[in-house]
Length: 387
Ligand SMILES: [Zn+2]
Image (tube, rainbow, N blue to C red):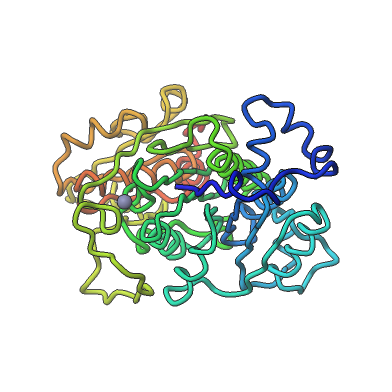
């Protein structure tokens, strides 16, 4: 857990200017000067200065997080500015780590900001992460999520992981020894890919919500207030303006935090050969799924709609089984490993969570309807209403 450096070093006590700057924190009895001093002593690493990392880093800098590391190897592009609020038009073409650090320092000159313009990889992740107390993963690459998770588990560092997809996002906090890691929740590995923002699109404010939640979790861990999202995967649907939550348990057979882990050091993911593909998520476009359903003589696929009741009642695909996401674990426990279910939701992210849960439940080949019912209605059946 977090070392309590705040109480062992006197330089951590607050100056008059700091007392004024953080007055609204000091007024919170739960937070107070002790919380602010812990924050001043804390070192947080933000992986990815993108849509998630931008608000997370801005709020942590404003809040007075003493040392902030910012990892990113990219340069600011025009299409980033729709959501990456750490940057502005004047920084186009600048390295994100340096431009982000400059912005954070301008916001709060009292903190130390350390830009790391590197691509996080097996060779450097441990050395970098061990210099920090808490890690916020805002990267948009699935391989990086697993790499950061594994490094945090091996080093015993708390991790706040989030992901976004089109209009939906999800967040989970890992605290060593207290609950599941990211790999426990999503054991599919880097091949169970969710398309990134570049290919799938993303609502600009969505990472603002999720990144701010990540900063909130980091602040809580550091100041030791509240209950972190340990063992609870929180999902957010911006179109419905709905938060959902479901329980995720630590897996005894987790490859990195399990009882007999197979991952004891970091390795870069090597692309798999075609004949060596592990059980993973099949990704179906609406046209792919339509072909599966209408193929003459073939066995009808098992379709599982994981949306809420009101969404299902508004309109759904014929012969589909309706199991809202929060009831899915019980359903999966009764499902045959070779049932090859296709999961369906509104936009494709809850169903991707369903696929991850199915893999956990030893269902060998779950499938995701990419883009969900919205894309189905747009491309295949315009008579279906999507709530
Ligand atoms: Zn795990």
